[in-house]
Length: 344
Ligand code: KG4
Ligand code: ZN
Image 1 (tube, helix red, strand yellow):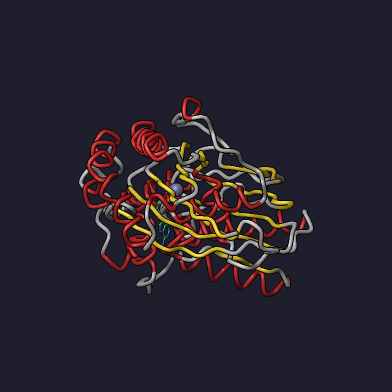
Image 2 (tube, protein in one colour):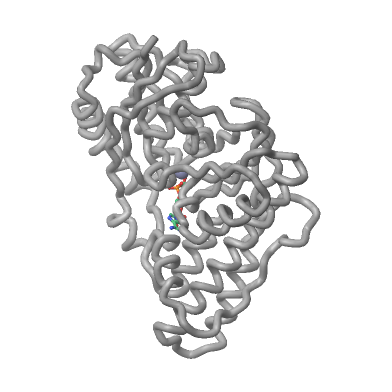
């Protein structure tokens, strides 16, 4: 039977809502997005060089209602037809999360609809999932965002184990911080990647942290320090030299992410590799991993670009998959709380 989910996301600096239709009883999980609306605060935070949490929360308060209204209107269905409300309850910035969670609770109370609390990282993890397809398990999933770098062994839907994560900075953070050193605007990942594409000179070889270690942990703070020293040694870099540094940074991050993911896939006899999260929008990472997977005969499932950075479609998708697999129950409203540190 066809069901409708209204999903709300406000964990960082995007206020987003989406309506998704899915089939609760089909033999394979099938879904369709009816709408997706995202209000990004990137321009507001760029002046601070990163997300300013108080400002983010204030803007969420202003935007949440119009964004949810617009998502419902664009979906062509009415709020009363919606079967579930899903909301990101963590991890993220506490004040930002509170806005989405409290709004969703109010909406659930007012409409009598069941409320599903969804982990933001579950949203990122499953955003590669295509309608009507079941991935070949086991899969090794690389989830790379601004706050997390996770390598996960996915044995089947909902059954997973974190193989490794970052000991310090996340991959997105490494992009953002080094981009800032090069004078690039926030968010640094896309800006640094664009600059790297113009590199024509000698590309500096930055350290590939933890590449040879016998585990699946990541560490990116050493790379950041190495870039800092590299820049300090030179008075003023020309635009082309900056592009070479950007290329060096991208090469280092992409090669570590790719090598560790492939190593994990081989050790775990994975049949599939999946890639998602904000950094999965990076073309070099997508292409490098695709090439490796082709060489090894592994299936690669990558989240569509629009579902890589924060959005509510991935929250609807994670919620729908959990309902379909009977792995979630609606929460009593009194038990739904914003949880900034909710790890998967
Ligand atoms: O998943 P996301 O939107 O937010 C978090 O949950 O953290 O990820 C944002 C991160 C930022 O660090 C941003 O610089 C990075 O994803 N990012 C990229 C690219 N697009 C976004 N990093 C590298 N290359 C890109 N094209
Ligand atoms: Zn995110």
